[in-house]
Length: 292
Image 1: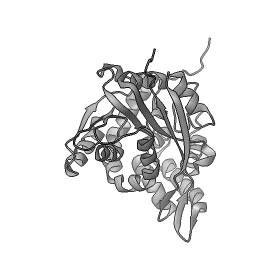
Image 2: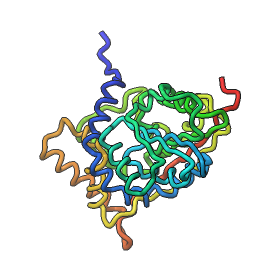
Image 3: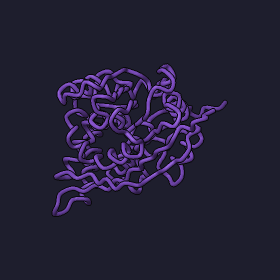
């Protein structure tokens, strides 16, 4: 009898939704930091997707909407941004942020990133997703939905992490937790932070979904915080997946795990504070005018 574990995408999505429902307040509170950390990559994604005055933009896995507002500012009063996410709690923060910023051209909608085909076909000039595509169990289904929503000649853009070796601020905590919790390697097909990071993988994934004129650029995005302890606080408050990985550990074991993570991350402290290595990939592509 084959007892090998099988990845359950529906259970994964339910857990992910619950994690973001819980992490929504913290993710919102960290918004200014996120804007600084991912600002360059976000700007490049909006450049490559040609978001400008009058653009209709779909933001997939929008979270608390920091990049949604950046897109809305570019789109201007004659444009529009629809922010979607699986978590209604985090979308509430995105909607509030848009109101506070005086951006009536933003609307929000609770929507699974793998169910974009329910949106009107060919209704957006651009589709963006910042650190979202990597967590979809069926990335091809998500990308097909994005292509469905795009006008012919429209552009999609995504920001993802590159490889674990280039993202020690995140990969070190993951490896420590995996060891302490005796977790097996990720199952085949299981999404995760580095699932599109290896050389050529993001480009091949976009091309497989039927996109063309694919461009992938590397952006250095070091995590700059006052200390390793502050980086641990950011990850504890905002990265629900790390807590899920620790679910089998006792409270004492979890506390000890966080102490080990902080100790390991201290090697990135220096005269200018904590600078955690992080490399993002910005991918962009075009929906062919005569798409199949």
